[in-house]
Image 1 (tube, rainbow, N blue to C red):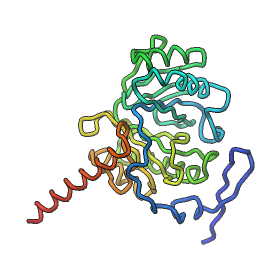
Image 2 (tube, one colour):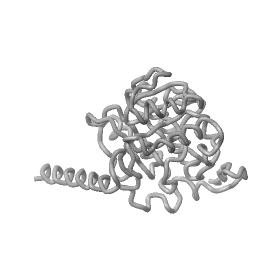
Image 3 (cartoon, helix red, strand yellow):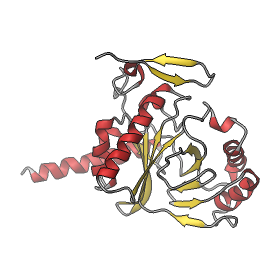
Image 4 (cartoon, one colour):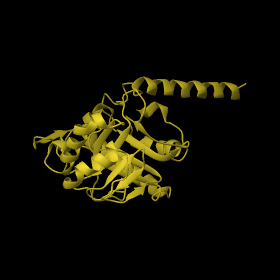
Length: 274
């Protein structure tokens, strides 16, 4: 069967052509590196709904607008924050997280604020991120269920630009088939780090074994989507061979956490085989 090239718009606005074998799930580097411990330590993740993958420039936060204003405000006050905080852009015309432009999701706090604007950025950062109180300019909404973010930032990296949209579609298809559309929400997002591990997926759960937290996965292919939904989302079990790490843990803690899980699984298997 003839393979057609994949077209991606790069940051310098030149049209670049590459085959799916070079940037997709069959690329030579796919699955080659160990994943555990590849998440930079942090404590809190903000997702700002702004635009869509088709409109994001290579560096969304460098462009004038709300993402830049919020990014600069966070950096200016980071020394006063108790929690190390990341900001990522997400969204799209068919976003499944029930958000609109200017809405902010905060994890693992599992809360949403609506309609942030550039003129209110400083107040938001002061009240919510520094003082860790409620933002007075908008009502806070608690989030329930699972929120899945998939890097689809094609103007930043072609691998994410190819793999991300395919995974978003596959997740949405399988979620609908399982009747989970009101419990599991999927959204494309901008750069999160680790292009070479594409497809990159982050899953935040309101209750994962009784804990509200976020887990990162890498080298995710469409064949892995049913596995992640069955084992992680509905089963509360880490998919170890795809696991990059967890929010709130250092790199060494991520590695140790996996070692302990694998050791425990091995001991259980050994006991069951006696």
